[in-house]
Length: 123
Image 1: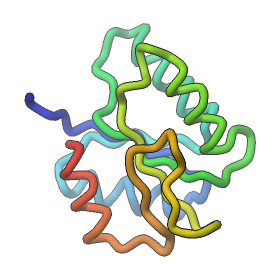
Image 2 (image 1 turned 135 degrees about the vertical axis):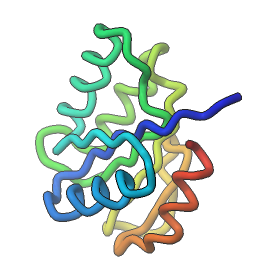
Image 3 (image 1 turned 45 degrees about the vertical axis):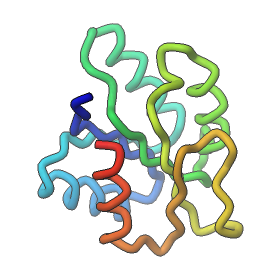
């Protein structure tokens, strides 16, 4: 199966979001960013309406205003048309335990080499 190179980064911290966009764009990925879970879901819904390919991976911060990462995961995984998109969460909060609905977990501060390896695994 050919994997796509589209990523959705959902992160409320502007500097982290811009850094990830820059790094992944330089690596040849098509990157879309959202500031919170609500924006991320709206992007996925619009992508479907426009009949464009869904992202191959979602990188998701857990602690965000408006719609948290946990709330985003609950909605995304409840929708049959979206549930198969793998999600890797990253957060500075808590321990090193992957949330049950996520496929992977990255701890902040983010190790760039580890994150690039994780993205290559799904894309």
